[in-house]
Image 1: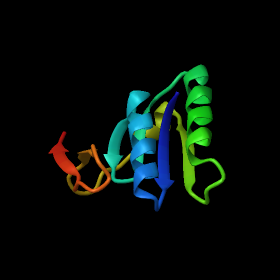
Image 2: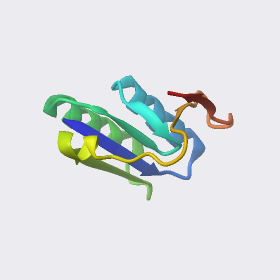
Image 3: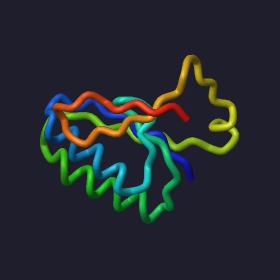
Length: 98
């Protein structure tokens, strides 16, 4: 199943750790606070466990939306799509068009 993961995290270090974790699971960084990709049920459960461990009792927010194939094929992109490669919290995003 394909998933869209978005987050609202104010702590720079935590945001970087979440971003790296999502990338480690093979998800694509499609916007500054958004990733997309396919995960098996076991990988999704493992990811949720890892993300819960990272954010702990903080007031940060991560949301995971399942996207069926029909819904994904119906997506519309307005403007030039970007991918982000953020290595450190204090660096500006590196933008690559795809």
